[in-house]
Length: 238
Ligand SMILES: *Cc1c(COP(=O)(O)O)cnc(C)c1O
View (cartoon, protein in one colour):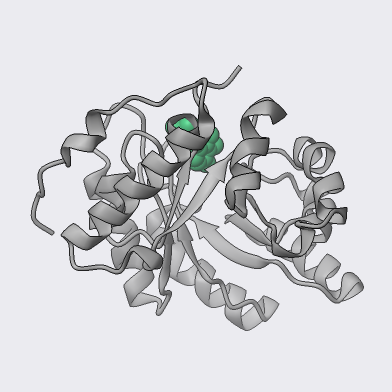
């Protein structure tokens, strides 16, 4: 994809005292960027990353209509969101696990999350499959790809992704919804987003979870269908 200049609004800072305003601003940037590459604004879902944010920052945008939230720890998410789940907005909430998942927490994650974005190994697939069987409930799944092949980062290596996706389908009966990646810090994100899009296309996967506060517009240009934005909405994490 060709480069497109950043919209002037991209320079507009987050307002930590008014998450509602920051949230609207991010939604506006997502819509502007989508239109600039002839995509419908509705094609891109904002996953508001509420991890490590005070509830005082999260509540206003929940009230204003945001329904999709990302958390990176199972227990923190349960502590924060269980009461909301049981409340009047609960039915509309969509909670996504975007952090690495330990096999011994897989059962809790399957029971709690609507979407798990960090499936990256057979052992975890097995643990998820076992719980899905027991609970009769299956979260939507994304395969995390370690596009930068960083040793410390979760995700399947790009060269192993096709075979892993094939095994998920054949051996576990999973149909992943899409792919997810977190590009290396300090590198241009575009090539990583392009690689993720290419792996998705050749495996028949339509959804791409990519792009964070610093690069979500780039991700949209490369085909992101959801962007995971935390600090640009809520301000810096504690
Ligand atoms: C924390 C986190 C985000 C959000 O990061 P921001 O830079 O605050 O937007 C997105 N994705 C993942 C996987 C994260 O852990």
